[in-house]
Amino acid sequence: MNITNNLNQILSQLPKHVTLVAVSKTKPVSDIMEAYDAGQRIFGENKIQDMADKYEEMPKDIEWHMIGHVQRNKVKYMAKFVSLIHGVDSLKLLKEINKQALNHNRTINCLLQIKIAEEDSKFGMSATEVRTMLSSEDFSELKNVCIKGLMGMATFTDDTNQIEQEFKKLTSIFNDLKPINHSNSDLQIISMGMSGDYKLAIDCGSNMIRVGSSIFGARTYNK
Ligand SMILES: *Cc1c(COP(=O)(O)O)cnc(C)c1O
Image (cartoon, rainbow, N blue to C red; front, side, top):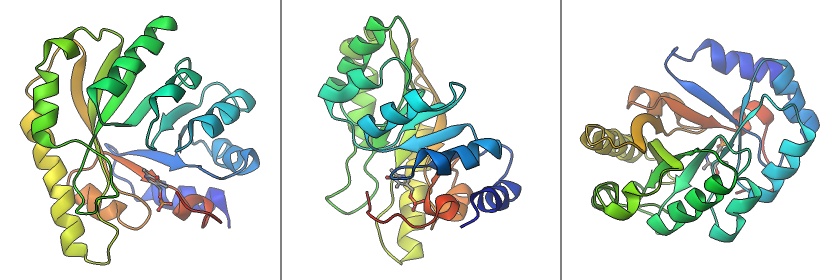
């Protein structure tokens, strides 16, 4: 596995408007340092404790993205440094993020996870739930969070047609919601696409892709 080559290969084909999040979950600091030395600064982790450990050990100009499901009681462990939380799926969670951000006197950027997949295993909100939340008074009081966009995960399937439909659904929801901006929301980011489907995701409107195994190699355990 040549991490530098893999990274450069992907970056060379990426349109300028697309941001690459290098998903380093389960990978050791030495692997992440190789990507860092090749110029990569944005890394994604799906476990808060792992991300916090890596944050402590690694250069401080790294932007750490939380891409996994977030448990409310663990938000405090990443509140001082996390740069973007992709998987926000409830007002309750957002309130906790706001509280912890306030403790650190900062604003935490978040993406709302939309459920686009058929599978029940995938987390996320519906377009209606998001719309209702964004226009609620409870939400407007959360001064220490900013909603920067939406995130979605397609169904785990070989059916490219289905994946394409789900990606297009997320872009369409994004386009519908984009005009309703508040002081604490500014919808700019569509986070969708992983190693197997990021090209399709970009064709369907993604401007932030989360790529792990194509950079760092297969993970020995998943999720
Ligand atoms: C693991 C993971 C990825 C990266 O998956 P790869 O197939 O290794 O590129 C992207 N997004 C989320 C939410 C993940 O958990």
